[in-house]
Length: 344
Length: 269
Image 1 (cartoon, rainbow over the protein chains, first blue to last red):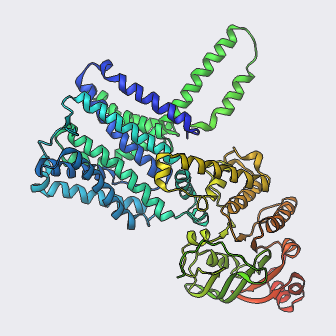
Image 2 (tube, chains in turn orange, green):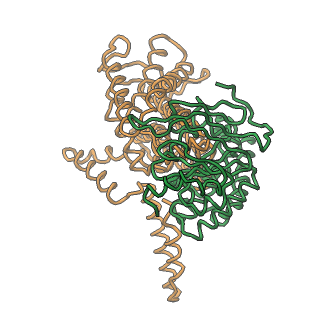
Image 3 (cartoon, rainbow over the protein chains, first blue to last red):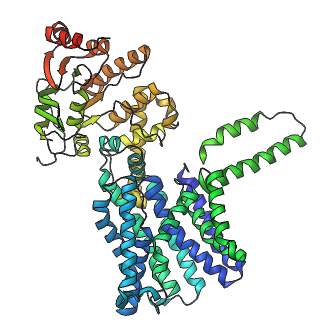
C-alpha cells in the first residue's frame, strides 16, 4: 500500500523511463512483442486492481471487456471502413457502456455471487465471439485489421506502436493514482471494508461500485483496441475464461492493493511462460509450481516481496558497514525493521 | 418523496427535528417494532432504553434506513425521508454510529474521518480523476476539517496511525469523530458505551455532552448503561417487545412502575 502521491509519481516516472529505454537493450523483435503484451496486460491489471483490490468487487469477466473492445474496433475499422481513431474510441465506449449495463444489476450481488455473474457474462461473450462467424470470423479469428493510425499518422513500425502503448499505459496509471489519492479512492476503500458504514457517511455505494466497474472495463477496453490494431489479428481464444482468471492472478500475485504490484504481476505472468518455454514438456508444471510458491512465501504479493527484499539488502549493507566500522551497535537496524513492516 | 433541499433551515428548540410516526418493522413472523412514535429535538439528548430484544437497534436501523420499515413515516426537519436511501438520509443530516464497530480498518485514523466528510465537501468525480486545482483545494479543506474533529474528540495525536491498530475505546471515539465529520443534524449513537470500561465511559459521557452543546445537535442514544443514560439524557423513551411503554425525563421514567416491572421481569443485572 503506497502512501504518498509524490512517491507514486516518482515510481511511475521510473517505470516509464525503464520502458522507454528498454527496446534498444532487448535487441530482438520477439522480446519487443513480449514487452508490448506485458504493457497491455498491465493496463488491464491496473484497472482490475482498482476494482478488486481497492473496491473489493470481484470480476471474472474482464477478458470479455478486453475482447469486446477488440472485436468492436476490428469490425468497425476492417469491415465497415471507419477510421481507426474513431473505431478505437467506439471500442472503448462499447466496453464501458456494456459494463454499465451489466454492472447495474450485477453489482447488487456480493462476493462469490458477483464473481459468478461476471463469469457468466464472460462466457456469454466468449460464445458470441466464437459463434457469430460472419461478424467475427469465429474460432479461426479476425484477420486484416488495419494497423494503428491516428490523425493521418500511421504507426508502421512495432516500435512506434510500443511507444504509443506505454504513453497510454502511463496515462492509465496516472489516472489510477489520482483516483486512489482522492475522495473517490477513499469512498472505494470505505465500501470495501464496510458497506453499511460507507452508506452511513453518505456514500452512494451503488454509484461508486458502478463507477469503478466502468472505469476498469474502459481500461480493459483500451488494452483491447490497442491489441487489435497492434497484432492486426484477433481470435476468441485470447479473450476466454482462462484469460480472465490469469488477470485476477496478476492482481493477486502482484499484491491486491498495490498498483505497482499489479503491474509487476502482469509483467511477471506474461514473461514467465516465455522463459519456461525452454523446458517444453514440464512447462505447465513449473508455471503452476512457481505460482504456488509465490502465494506461499509472498503473502503480500510480489510488490510486498520486493519491498522486503529491498529492506533486507539495505539492512545487510547497513550491518556490513557497521561491522567494518567495528561498532557493536545494531539498535538502529532493529528500529528500521520494526518501522518498515507495514508498508507492503 | 420530497424534493432534496439544501438542508439549511433554522429550527426552534421546541419543534422536534426528527419525527417518527407509527413505525412498524416485522422480520418474518416477528414484530420487532409496532406503533412506535418517536421525536428528537435539537440540542437535546434523547435516550432509547429497554430490555434485550426490545427493538432499540431496530429503531435506529429503521430511522437510518438500513432496515425498511413496513409501516410508518419519518420526517427530518422539513423533509419527508420515509422513502429515502440510507446515504440520502445521511446527506440530509441523519448520521449514525454502529454497535459493532464499523470503522474503515484499511485506512488511517485521519482518512477515516476524511471519508466522513465525503458527502458534505464534494467535487465532481472527473475533477478528482484529473486532479484539478479545485479538487486539491477541496482535499486540503477536508483534511483540515477532519483534523479539527479529531482534535475535538482527542485523537489528534493518533491521526497518522492505521485505524485497526487503535485500542477498542479509541476506535469508538474514532467512529464518533467520523460521524461528526459528516455534519449531522441528528446523531444516532447505537450503544456507544458497549465494551468500554468505567473511565472510558466517563470520558465518553462528557464527550457526548460537549458534542451536544458545541454542535447544537439532536442526539439519539441507544444504550444499556443505565448510569450513563440517566446522567446525560434530556428525554428517555422505554421500549419493551417493540412497543413504547414509557417516556419522559430520566426521573419520571425511573419511577414508572411499568418500566420497573419490565426490567425486573427480565434478567436484571
